[in-house]
Amino acid sequence: MENIQLPPEATQGQGSQEEAAQRAQQEEQLRRDLMATVLDSPARERLSRIALVSPERSRQIETILMRMAQSGQLRGKVSENQLIELLDQMEDVQGKSSSKKSTIVYQRRKDFDDDDFDI
Image (cartoon, rainbow, N blue to C red; front, side, top):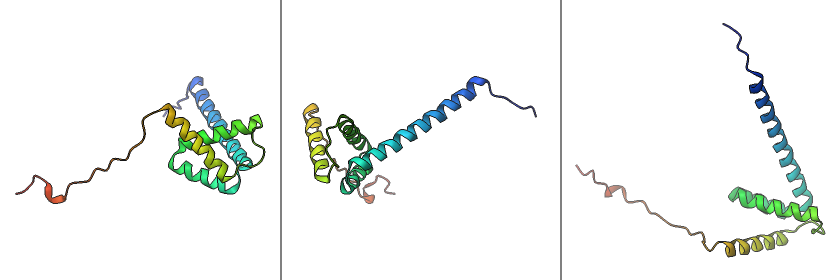
């Protein structure tokens, strides 16, 4: 069998992907460290529960908190009550921007005996 070598462009693409993954991992670690310094323990727990249910909402909150910390708007650690107020404010803003509210629709399954395969 012959040894097959990849062209230089192919190996460079893999390197940039690895670098991008490392950069993303570093940014994620920086985000976690900043959240640990900005939020108190109950607020961090609440934010992690929010992330389980709605990761995009958690990211939005983290981004807002990072901006507030970088601009000096935060005086101390954010408590759970302050985080709840921030969530309420986000909900109000999103509610005003989109009039569409989420609704839950229940679809019940038909009984097993309701099929058309009566032989």
